[in-house]
Length: 80
Image 1 (cartoon, rainbow, N blue to C red):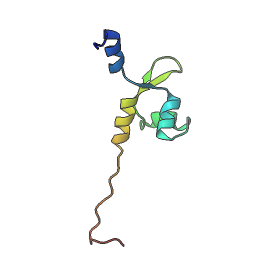
Image 2: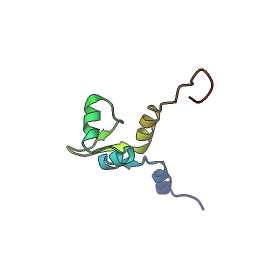
Image 3: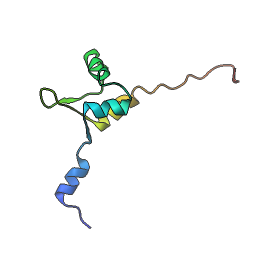
Image 4: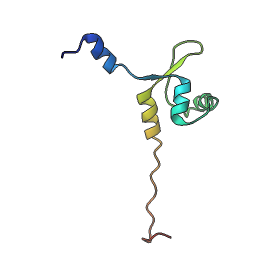
């Protein structure tokens, strides 16, 4: 079955998240996100109204992936 142009547009539209959803996804409080934004340590977002901010899910996932910490290899071989 062929997709309509509306269905194609919907499948390509970003998955938007509210601040509450971003906080739930990251496991942080609602008061932490504005503080991180003020410090420049938060995922990018769109200000779409005086109090409305939206964030693309892909931006949150990319921001989180940039913070992946890999364990350092230990020299000496065995488990302590």
